[in-house]
Image 1 (cartoon, rainbow, N blue to C red):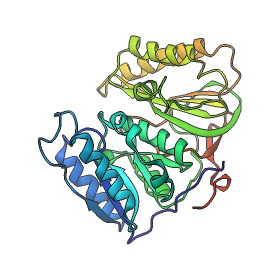
Image 2 (image 1 turned 45 degrees about the vertical axis):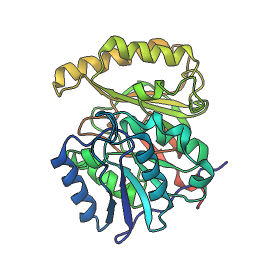
Image 3 (image 1 turned 30 degrees about the horizontal axis):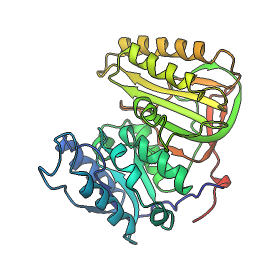
Image 4 (image 1 turned 30 degrees about the vertical axis):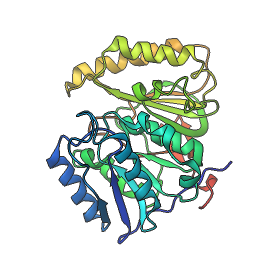
Amino acid sequence: MRPVLPPGLQPGDTIAIIHPAGPVRDEEGFVQGVQILRDFGLHIRCELPPKGSGPDYLAADDHWRLAELHRLWADEEVKALIAARGGYGCLRLINRLDWDFLRARPKWLLGFSDLTVLLNGISARTGFVTLHSPMISTLARADRLSYERFREVLAGEFRPCERPAGLEILRGGFGQGRLLGGNLTTFCHLLGTPWQPQTEGCILFLEDTAEPLYKLDRMLTHLACCGLLERLSGLILGRFDPGHDDRLEILRLNEQIWQRVLELTTAATYPVWGGFPVGHQQENFALPIGMEARMNSLSGILTFLPHTCASP
């Protein structure tokens, strides 16, 4: 099945803010993110969750969050849904989604972190390309290149990612396949569920934040033991950070992760890149999950192939 590419957003289109995971903690960042979308010329649809309707680590109870997603997906004026923030909560919703309902209404879904559950699950079950990208609460702190790529991709433009600063070619070669992945911790939570992604022939990208090295090692080893790293077309490691922006400590952590990944994939021949600008820090390039992409290790360019997608 060819992936379905929802149409890009134009000034005057409506984008809806959803709360499928945790509550908004950074109200100033949320307001700034909303204003950025308005500066794009987009209309905003947003309903704030009722306070106290669920545990304090969720934006609202499961019923409200699920109903919000379905209601806004049904709204014909809404062209895209973007998460307010991540945290936790998407795993509690995915088994209650109405797949036939969603499949009949192609729209963009945007977010990252805990949204890894919905981005990969909805893409797999509906065939829609989803967008791993900054969310409302993180838009204002995205660096210039991430901001520009977000704006371009939202409008339906998929320029190649020219070799980004800090990219390391850990294993050379060429690879082509559908993009999937996201947050490593959340991705591992899908293992053994009906929503476990099928990685064979795909380009997998992974990132994480505020996890110690031994936990990252454990999760990567878990993926390898499940066979999910065996028959990839390529592997892209994003930015891993210890929960703060100490650049030296971040560099050391990433180098240790790179070494462990190469150990786990010794028998593989596909390309492996490290330090790609996707993750929880300022550098977070928008990546279309479900779309074919090509890795060229000679140039360090990641090329997207929207022509391989079908129109809604």
